[in-house]
Image (cartoon, rainbow over all chains, first blue to last red; front, side, top):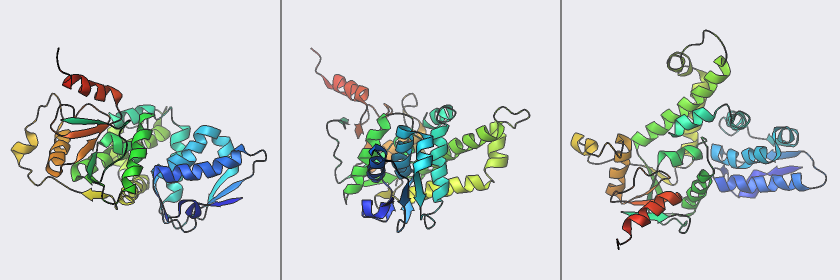
Length: 111
Length: 194
């Protein structure tokens, strides 16, 4: 199964929190169906992708369904044109799995 | 002074906004509390309006960049040196290792890319009158230098400050917040004394 981010957003920018929630809702349907299948999240024609978007979409999926499920079923594809996409994606993932370890650093940054 | 309770008045207007750095940071990836969700949604709503703009001054840009880079440096330090003997002190690591690393460069690019992605609604703006006396005349018990700068910018541009902190409480500007305690303090302060 493939879902197109540009079709969901009607925009070439995946920048806002609400954009991420829209993509999250679309992917979530798959987790709620009786027969889960792998989902390719297609970033073709997306020019820009923000940290805010990634946290609201994939970050929320990680929080709701866990690392193993997301790793198994969700795969971003066709993102080579987006600056540092995989670095931002890995950073989002790292922040999630190390949430406790990084808590003191977050508190320091927000103080 | 006026405080807007964003819980009951969550629709932005076509005007200038200044986001406190603690509102910017969750938008840019440092997220620590459920309250920040409200501010992210408010941020989204600003982008739905053509003439609502967010003012960002160079001082605040510097503060945001420094805090985000330091946060990311802490993460790298944790992964590289946690539990190891003979690790450099963090300040030494930050200057000698992290700042010159590819990792720092990529983090910097990502932060700039995120902010640049919002450029349709973000205006870089600084104080027009920035003499020493104006910049430094504030009650140091209530504000720090950067908060005072944002306050002066808000006055200059008739901008609303969006914040979750009490730092801007009691000033002659309009503040919008989802902080119920802050709003309650304000309503208590303007109640007529019987």
